[in-house]
Length: 101
Image 1 (tube, rainbow, N blue to C red):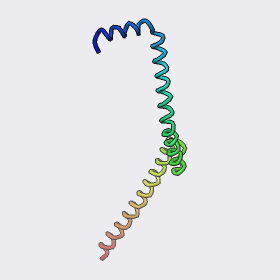
Image 2: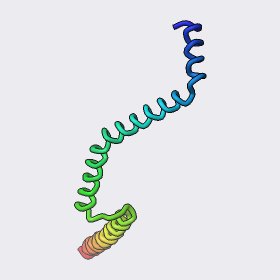
Image 3: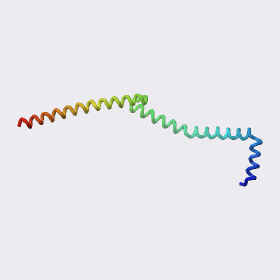
């Protein structure tokens, strides 16, 4: 492709801007339609997967999920504190038994 060839083509484009814009618009629209059609099945599949996980996890929104996680963390911390208290009690009893003996 030479410079003169490009110069001739530019003259054609310059003399027909409406046709070029129309062609560009049709090509863009067709591309968008094809991409939408192609990915719509994948998007639906992913939406179904998300819905399945939401049902399994009993979650409606990310905020609710965060709230449940925080509640679980609080319960875990309470249980750990209880276990720590029991361990300390046992250690004190063991120490007193050693002192008694």
